[in-house]
Length: 72
Image 1 (cartoon, one colour):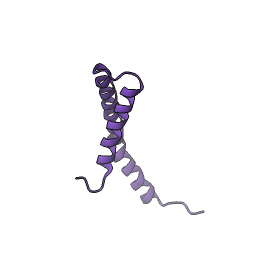
Image 2: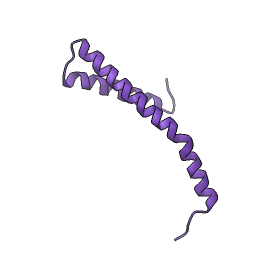
Image 3: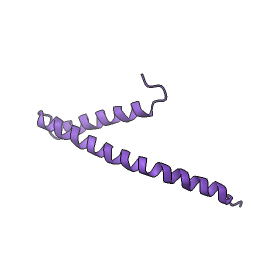
């Protein structure tokens, strides 16, 4: 079994260190957005599973659009 050299390992650690804050911030923002959409739907009469469905739909659409290589 071959072991990656130190420059490859160092590069991967640097990439992880660069990406980690962005991923953490994205998770926090996504959670806050989900809760806000769910609560707003509940305040406007969509209670229980329906408010969750609306939040999941809106969050999924947002995630899909941001992951799209060719946004409209």
